[in-house]
Amino acid sequence: DIQMTQSPSSVSASVGDKVTITCRASQSISSYLNWYQQKPGKVPKLLIYIASSLQSGVPSRFSGSGSGTDFSLTISSLQREDFATYYCQQTYNTPKTFGQGTKVEIK
Amino acid sequence: QVQLVQSGAEVKKPGASVRVSCKASGYTFTSYEINWVRQATGQGLEWMGWMNPNSGDTGYIQKFQGRLTMTRSTSISTAYMELSSLRSEDTAVYYCVRVGLYGDAADYWGQGTLVTVSS
Image 1: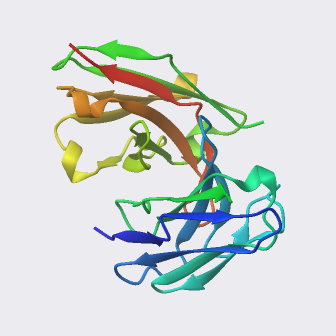
Image 2 (image 1 turned 30 degrees about the vertical axis):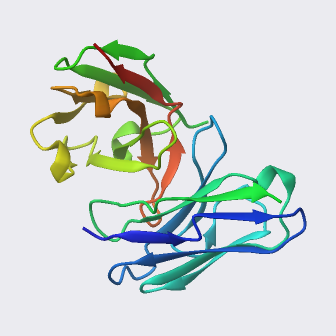
């Protein structure tokens, strides 16, 4: 199975900050990497697919990059509604494993 | 609009089975793969397996082999997830998700079904 490792596990930031979360795969996954946002008590929401494609309706302050084994999700200017937990997921092969999550908290 | 509506919360005793349903609407049910994902309280997301609603083909992760069954009824656009021999560690919210056409991302999620396993 492909292991997905996110870092950091949590980050404290202020409104307006630029935040970057990384995700590393245990083997190459080409660009088959997706990012999800989950707010407390809510259903996860797709933000980015195929490493860098923005899902319809997602604000442009979210961006994704990377290929192979190293990927990142960047929030260019953190807004209050962005405080949540973010998960990466590889869909290169099954099982389609998730990272352990990164919690973005208010500083 | 695309919707996945899941059945309600369940409380089961250890050793019992649970079946969760997921009714799809707003798209052609047989054209998109369905996956199931679970999340224990305060924990991360765990991908459980996949089903092709057109063929009925399925695949499950190793830890669930023999306990997990995914089925569907195409006539009512509904997917089902049955987990047997329940243990306390199966207590979680279970989500059905639609796999989109690009990158196999989970583009639509059901609202989740809480399954509690307790004696």
